[in-house]
Each structure stands twice: as structure tokens, then as C-alpha cells.
Length: 326
Image (cartoon, rainbow, N blue to C red):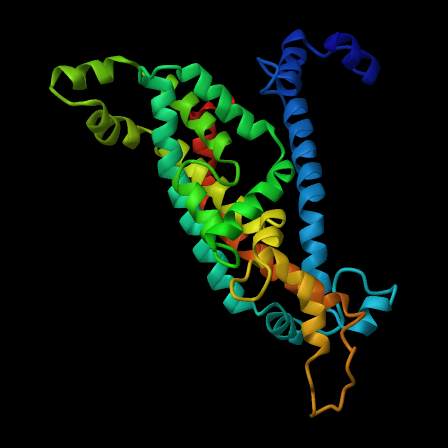
């Protein structure tokens, strides 16, 4: 087929040798399907298209966050503003109570992620390796906690945490994480169970012959091997606790403890309450200020982006080695 195509494409070159045609064919198609020039070009086109699809909202946020109102309403200004207005970020920091919310949300997200990482690892190891009565029944219950929507449990959980005096604090997020539950806790148990199930049983048998019990075997042998799964669970848990809105809106009703995901709801009202005596600006000046909102949104997503930027290589390696690809 490749020879016929080349003969039609080069009608004035009837003397092309078979060896040349074979070289061109190998160049275009390759020895295998995935190493030819055509396949590589198609792969790069797909990667660039997907990158543009996912990165264009981020570039739009970054571009808009440096605009002023005149650039925003000017149809001639699309990506690059005439003047970079850095004051949008200072206003967004004030409106978000950024540093206070950043400290509170970092404490809550990191604490819950670390606790879920260790508690779900122990629970997943128990489901994968230990002989526990009614283990399958208990695992079905864990699956039910993952399948049942959180919204259906909102009222009982709110009443429970209210009676315990945990509202307006990080305890509704941290304490469930300590017991291998909380946000997506069942999913993390499944990830660890799948990972430990793939490890050879000979390692445990050798440890048992050396006199190690189940807990020592887990701590000294199995848990160090689970570092890829632990990294995956930590990153997922951190991002989901950082971005949680439903649970934060349910449990946090005042400004005693601030969740970053909720601060955009209050930023505009806080900015409208600001008094700027130097320029004698009136209240309500921020009502139509989309650049400040984009600056605030970018500040909110910045910490998870920075975390992923440093951990992405280990994240990809962990995805390849955990049960997520089984």
C-alpha cells in the first residue's frame, strides 16, 4: 500500500528503488505502530490540543488578573493587558483574608491528609493481608460509605458535630481522617488494599519465620514499600480537603476558622466595605471588578499547583505502581 501511494505521489520518478521505498516506509510507519513518524506527529498534536484545553482557563485567569476595567471592556485587548495592574492582587489578598485563610486551610488539609495516609494504609493492609472475621462484610460497608452521597448524610453529621461542639473548627475534617474516613476515605482504603494485594506473600512469610508479628511486619516491611501509594493518597487528600466546599459550608458558619474554598463568596462584600480615603472612591467600586476576582481565584488554586509542580514526577511514578492502573 505504501509503495502504491508513493508511486502515485511521484509519477515522474519511476526509478525509485525498492530499498528507498522501504526506508521511507520505515520512517513514516516505523518498525512497530508506535515508533513511526506519523504516529509521533499524531501524538504531539493530541498532547498539544489537550494541553491547550486544560491550560487555557489558567492562562485566562492569569491574563485577566492583571487587567484594569478599561482593558477588560476593550475588545482589542485579549490576552496581554496594556498595563499590568498588580494592585488587583493586593485587593484580592485583603478581600480573601488570604493569609489567615491560608494558614487555617493548610493546617486542616495537611493534618487530614497525613492522618488519612497512615490510617487508610493500616486499614487497607488489614483488608488485604490479615485474616479478620467477616472481613468481606466490613469491606462492603466501606464501599457503601464511598457510594452513598455525602449530601444524604449532611443533617445527621451536622447534628453530631454540633452536639460534640466541633462546628467552626477543623475537627470535623481531622477526626474522621484519624479513623480512615473523612473526605474520600473509602477510596483511599481501596487504593491501599489493591496495592498491598499485589505484593508477594513470601515477604510476610519470611518476616514471620524471623519472629515478626503482623504489626511489625506492616511497619518495617510493608509500609516502606507502599511509599508510591502513600504519595498518591496524600496528594489526593490534600487537594480534596483544600477544595472542599460542601463540607466547609456545612460546618464552618463564622470566621473563627476559614476555609479557602469559601472565601470567594465573601470577597466582594469585604472589598465593598473598604474605605479608600486617598482617592475618595465610593463604596461598591468592586462590584464589576472581574480582574480582582480572577486574582483571588488564582491565589486560591496556587498552593495545590505549586505542590503538584514539585511532586508531579513522583506522582506519575506512584500512579504507575499503585492499584489505580490494575
